[in-house]
Image 1 (tube, helix red, strand yellow):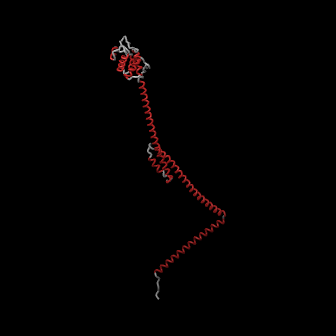
Image 2: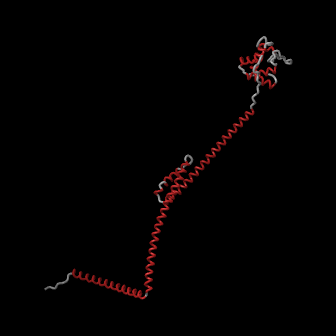
Image 3: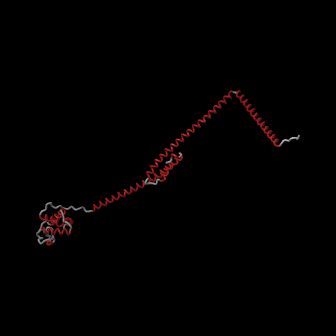
Length: 307
């Protein structure tokens, strides 16, 4: 019978099993040692506690104190969270209120600036702030500050515009008042420089004789009315007293109109020396040709003493 030899695979397996067994033994030994250490520590601790009641009470008190402190810390943490939540709500509410007040003031400023100042930048900022309900409070406050700056800028422009407009209106009013005063002064000066309207005499309401003839002739021949008749009456009262035969001894003037010489009246009729109608006809023609009207002749006579 042949001697059998171990194969290499069998030998390798046996060696591995030996190593594993050795490792397991080492681990058991370590566990046993740790258990011994723990047991000895426990015995020592129990002995110390049994030997001193004060030590036991202190340990219990310390444990209770640590529990209380832990509970206080937890309660404080919960309370801080609640306070943070409340503070956050107040901040958001303040942001909303501030945004609404700012938008209200900005809208009023934009309306006031119409036709007076450019408010386009303010309007753009307002459009952004209008979305305040979707924005964080910090962003809302930033936009509020920016909007307030734009409001102040627009208000300053409006104030400057209104100031210039008021100055312009005041200047125009002052110029108009000055022009009116100058015009009134010029008219007053013109009236003061103009000669007063002459006061003409008034003729008799019911003339007779030569005066009646003169009134009818002046109306039919020249269209002169009663206003001119009074001047004629006074003019020839002064010259001849309406006497057909009146004669100026120094100049030789003759008749009612005091023609010089009297023969000039022959152009009106051959009976010029005795007929009142002939003398009046010539006299009216003389007055019309030289003075334009009886009142013109009367004014000249008053001025220089003759006509």
